[in-house]
Image (tube, rainbow, N blue to C red):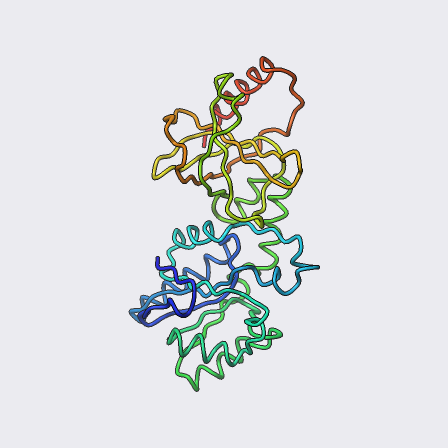
Length: 308
């Protein structure tokens, strides 16, 4: 998959079949659109393409209200990886600013879809709006398509989950720690990507060396404090493990602490993708190294016994 981070970076895309949207979570509804893009691209000997935005428009347009505390299912890097796995050919990430938000729907079509991408087909989800004040819609695109020589297709309501509703449900499930429900909505596992760094020295002392995983963005949505069963992918190798989500003392930072079973001890600095499977337990008050060691042994056995 090719990634372009501006229109200036954009290189020629063969007979582009295009959609637009935030695509946070790359959930089952988004995959319906991507699958349709791929089928249409084959029909016209072309490539699928998504125009998406960073930061999230709500964080720019409503910084003191709707966007102030908006947490996202995916960081930008996570979203790119999920789009790649979904089979998308190209993603164009446009910087969303207050100035860009003033772009009219006609200018969006003419300058971006037509002049920059030379779109052959455009696919939109049911009830999709775009442009300044959300003035553009399917009917508007259809009219312009006749003038600019592109075709437009709308995914029927019964074939796609409404993105806003689905993303809201997924965020709530993650926020509540209901990982299995979130995974069902997503149609893949909730993930955290980052780099492996050294964890608490105490864990090394009691025989449970682990790693901290630091996300790249402060807008990342984490599940609540507790222990989770995970798989970790490190440069193509997979390891079963457990992940502790905890809050730092200042309550501002979220710490992601992982124990990887049967993994080599030379993974520091490597990039990792954590796949979350199940919530195991909440945080417990533990006094002393002996009790902590005993609890970690129990936790490891519980997760080791899970079939996943």
